[in-house]
Image (cartoon, rainbow, N blue to C red; front, top):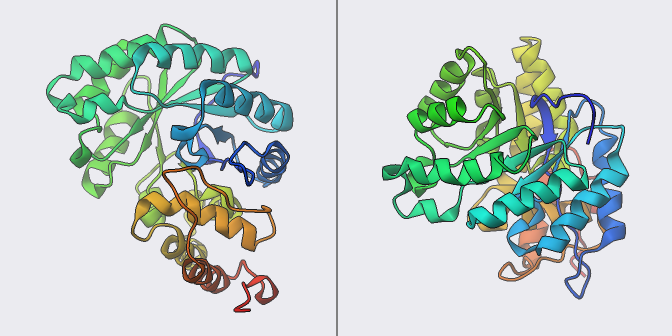
Length: 319
């Protein structure tokens, strides 16, 4: 853990978790992936144990080891954000304590999946989940804001109440998937006496999201295109819309590659992209995810070439 307080802003890639052919964590590939991300000029932190890392399929000990390896590889380069993903508040508190002890600088707090069953009508349940985490650590918290339609999103009133109750909340990772609500989040959270930062994860419309005034972005796509995300964010910060549009034109094919239906395969596709780019040896995923078909992989290759990040020599052969 860094002695300097972590400020949630800028470009924060969420790293992938490589597995070997036996579906065990591939530590060598994971270290390589972390080193490559940490060397991207302009990123401000790296997130582990998030959706991109298939955290749903990682044991408690694997999550601990993930943080320890990341701390070992990126210490002194950029801060480390660790995801807290579980429906059980007691386990969430244990994960938070473990993450702090293992060297995390901040926590990305996923909502309890129990909230999908009417949580919006019982905001005290969301408060109880956050309270369990906040009481277990002094690390700054980034709340993961889900779409309201799925039942896991916090209403704006609930977000404001959580902020007032738990001072360790420093930011939200906004995936509300509603441009109007997204702008409300930015305006209302920025207007507070102690402003809460808004990190976009609207990777399917990133340029539009950043232009609204986000403080940064936290995205699994950064595991592949962190350099383009940095360039886009800096162009927006510089009010250089022409350059931002040009960079977004390169990002757009990757949106088509990663975020097409079904969305459950988005990080599966990112792994295949890293294999195509010679940045990962193999794209193994744990069940219930399954490997993509060859036509799927070939489509990703074509879109990476369209984005001008895949040389023709790296494209998959038909043989």
